[in-house]
Length: 464
Image (cartoon, rainbow, N blue to C red; front, side, top):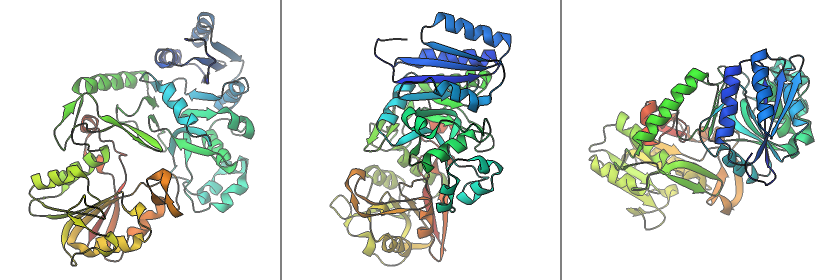
């Protein structure tokens, strides 16, 4: 343990056999953790090889607590044993044989995230199960009868419920002590779901750590490969970890490139916003963000742009160059002078059916009467034309929240769009579909261009 300051972080593992994997998980904790930390390991009656490994670690390191159980108390029971000993303000859990850190400084990123969000009790990879996505689905779970605060679901029957996937998570110990750690009645399966639910029902928040990729075969597809934004992966075998490391090394040698302006270099710039940081996002030459590179790459692969008439609302500077290079007629509109036409999207100054393509990225969340703006987007589209609309959608909540006045701390937004926002876009005569522009690229291209499959959810409106 480096430094003499009191640790803020306590890492804990629950082990059961699989000495080779446990050894590699622990090796990486010590190799990649920079802040002072304590490590507690609860062993559930492992075989002798694993016990020898843990006893040697306890002997050689001065920051380790080892708890040996004479029977398997499963992950929930073992975690509660560790949590009862933790005095530090934050705890990090790693699955002891499938969760691997691949980059320095993971701990500081986690601590910064938690310290900046005092109401977040639990953070990791936030997901919803397709088998029981809503409150009604939760009520149908056999184990829901064992959940704490079951009455909370009654106010959210139609809301989408998310939980922090159990392979890795950060825990605020103040909140954990308040609700009582993991549910003793749910020692393994659904323990992560129940804990997430219990925090929300108690008034705390759960949150998504954007640099953690922790999935489960019943929830999401397997991890495809290394992406620079992710520094913690679960689940991986040791063999798959070696492949990820090779992909990481190849990506570092290759560097990054902008598919819009052609820039090449070591890394993109970070995008720092009031409520988030998007690492490795902005092209240092043209200023294109990851979502811009994804959108224009998607258009390259799906539309023939020569002679098309394109309207860009609240224009992005690099878009004009991009469309004109491809022979399209580019027109932009905004309330200020930084556009071809000064105007209000609620009363667009063009005739019906004027444009083949309309781009409206991060505009509607600024307009109180967004129904008027959406109607105008559809009106000025030609038959068979397409509009590409993106809003900063909260994908962890179903209902859109309207603000009484623009939120100065959030770029002047007048709403926080939820998953239900798509219903506002599905007007008569329009085919509306969610579009993940990043999916137009294979994995190596996404890494090279800094385009990830979850780089913003765009809605494509196609006019009949």
